[in-house]
Length: 317
Image (cartoon, rainbow, N blue to C red; front, side, top):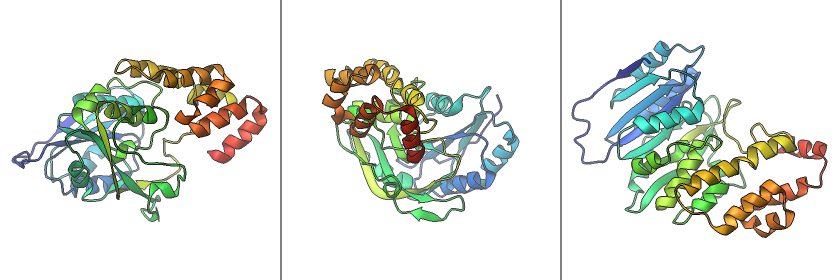
């Protein structure tokens, strides 16, 4: 495993807690990576450390990524490593979470653009009981042009939440993109290991919500780049009844088992998960408050032919 670590004298003598920025890199488009790194370098928050892991990019040389980081990051120290084998996004962020040091962790994609005040604003929102703060995001295209002022403009059903007692809400629907969050390191490390079938940012949000408050900063603090290769999406890889069941229903059993290691779920929550798996229509309807849209769709799926379901999924993806 190759690695480079830089140090910078005096950077911790600020009186502010250290924020570790955790970035997973895979086959980066170098102009986008450079733009993101420069936006990190321009952060106004005074005590930062950047951890980068390349997930065995097959065509982009590790040396090219190292050189880009060296050119762009001058304001704070960084460490860059290459995985020994391809681990995927969840596995790479899990390694970063295990090895990073700091009081807060900020998870970072390779192709977004952060506003200079992003980390300062999120850190200011971290009250005594707050385990995670997150922000809204502008949407930018491949050329960096703003195409929406808020993520809600392109995801009309998105509802941001804040406060206490949100773990069960996060369990069924995630409104917090990993790249928009600042989380206490203790909470993030408690989330390790990440469940295999749950996207890591949702699991971190669940654990943070179990441990305390979540705060939302309404101001868009970054440009979230939308392009054809974005990994996330509720219906990514879902195109039939079978794939919907395997990707949108069965993973909840694994997630529930991991949840039980930290807290006891409510009987209603466990019953809803069981009803969805067993296609118990009455119980799905009874507990639909946990996930209303999905409950209605899954009841309809019990009666609709697969071709109609496929057509609906194509239009919704």
